[in-house]
Length: 355
Image (cartoon, rainbow, N blue to C red; front, side, top):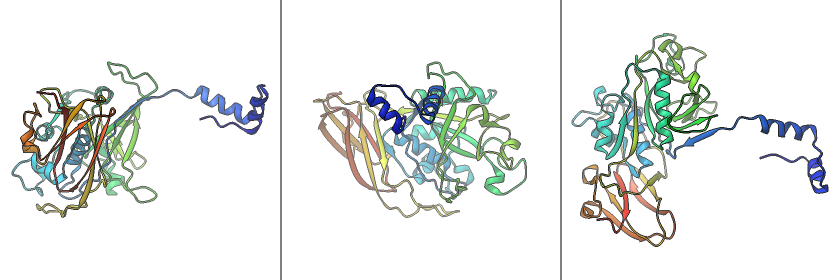
């Protein structure tokens, strides 16, 4: 927005062109500022459990799943990612490049894994850019700055391949976002770290971070520099990423559903515990989009991953715990329901006329 100074307002009213020094500078700045093109995904921010080696992978998958119509607790996602393992075991974590795709399948999400061990960060960022342009959130591994997080001066502090798992929520470029995706050093990537960085002036979680492509990739030693950034993309080692492309829907009939929650935290798990933490009241809001006015639809809610069908939702209506039939009056329909934070909620919406 250009702010009109009083002299300019008078000049406009009189039909003349008179610009003050201040307004001239404003117009010059607006004229020379490069245009940015961006894609931002509506990924809700979530606060992860810090216990049991951290639930960053689990929270990343939950965050991505919310924009496709489903909510689960971190405890349940870990249990589905590593069936039969105690949650206090390090091997039970949901890790990109290990059990991430299996976990996505078990929560009825379609996914695409980045598999290019010999690639460069440039290639990886180009892949991320293309996936986000396709409206697919990406779960990826990053380095944390060990000096900032752990107060250590060890240049090799931290893991060799990645320390933390985050969810990519957007990309931006000074060039039009056209396919196939192209790398530019001044492109930016935005992600949520699930609230673990609290080194802010207020001491509160920052949640959202944006880095230019050209400055994001660092070696382990560069990532740990005292003057370095909070997060870096691992360089010199394989990069790991998982793109969430939608819900499992073999019949291609499900409509887009976005879920938001009244709070973004489940409290905290006790370190070393294998018991689910106490649950709390939670309100979920599901927004169905892509509707046509005067057409009938069915909204199904399933209360466990085991009950969710991957096709023919109307034919499998008996598997749903809740069914709502409605006639659309516009392009969206919104429903709000009360649950517990320990509940599993999967929404699927289809035309009532689907087989």
